[in-house]
Image 1 (cartoon, one colour):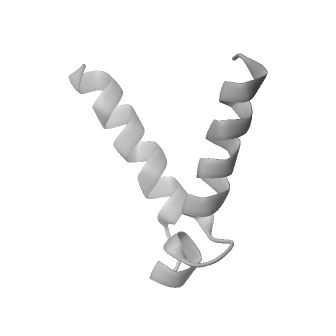
Image 2: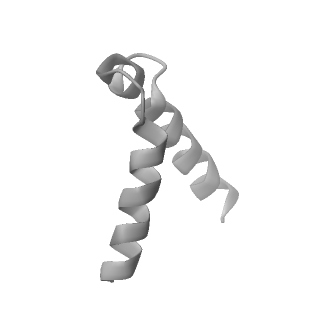
Length: 46
């Protein structure tokens, strides 16, 4: 479990590097885009 957490943390760090808080959590930001994709993937049955 620890290895997967470290991998996830590294991916998160890469995705947010150089972005402002608004770009991450604001309207149309990274969090909104990721949430949309998670829903879409879940509905696709993946």
